Image (tube, rainbow, N blue to C red):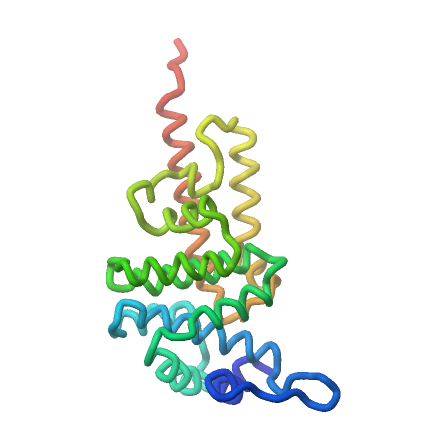
Length: 231
C-alpha cells in the first residue's frame, strides 16, 4: 500500500488537536503517514515563506513530491491547507529530524528539496533564507555543513566545487575521486529510497547528483588546465 494512502487522516491529526494514544500505547496515527504529512507540510510552508505562493512554487513542490493520479488530489488539499501560513513549520522539521536523526544524508535530501522550492522564482528572499537556516539547525547541521548545502544551490561561492563536494582544495586526486564516489553513491536514487524516503521523492536525488557531477567535472577540468606541459 502506498504511504500516501492515509495522508488525509494524518493531515487532520497533525493540524488538529493532538491525538490520544490507544490503550496499548501506540499512537492512532500511522508513523509512516505522519512522516509523509510532515514532509508535505514543510514543503508547503516553504512555498509560503516569502508571503505568497506562486504557480512556480506549486510546480517546484510537485517536482519534489511526485504523486500518481490517485493521490495527487489528496496531496493538493493537504498542500493548500498547510500553505496558508508558515506558523508551525519548526514542528514538522522536528518530526522529520527525529525520524532520520541517525541518517543525516536523508535530512540533507529534504533540505535540498526545500531549496528547490525556494528557488522556484529564481531568488531566495530573507524570509526564505531564515526558514531554510532554521530547518537546518533543527536537523542538526553545523554552520559549515549548512554553508556547503546552501552554496550548492546559491550564494557568492555557489560555484566552489570543493565546497560542494565537502573537500579542501589541496586534496589529492586519489582522495578527490574517493570523495566524489562516496557522495555519488550516497545520493543515488536507489540509495534515497533505501534510506527511507518515499519513492515519489527520487527527484531530489537526480537534482543532487547533477550538482555533484558538475562540481567533480569542474575540478578535473581545472586541474587538467593547471597541469604542467610535457615536452
